[in-house]
Image (cartoon, rainbow, N blue to C red):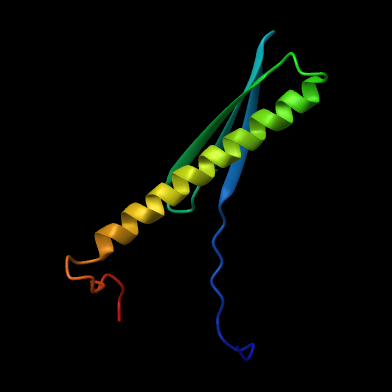
Length: 95
């Protein structure tokens, strides 16, 4: 790049919410795309860990991991749809 090419910026937002009860922490990671699409990941951890902070971290980590799996599944599905039976990519982009 020479620095004169236009850049395109997308903004995706992840909101993480935590629900605490006496025995567990449930985290939900919601990814919002600019086009209105959404992906959700959920993670649960025991609340009885040494500190509630550790349980929260673990639940959030699991929610983000679940979110990653959702995104990868979507990518794999999109790629599979874009490939013809003979293995040649279809013309889905504007070339």
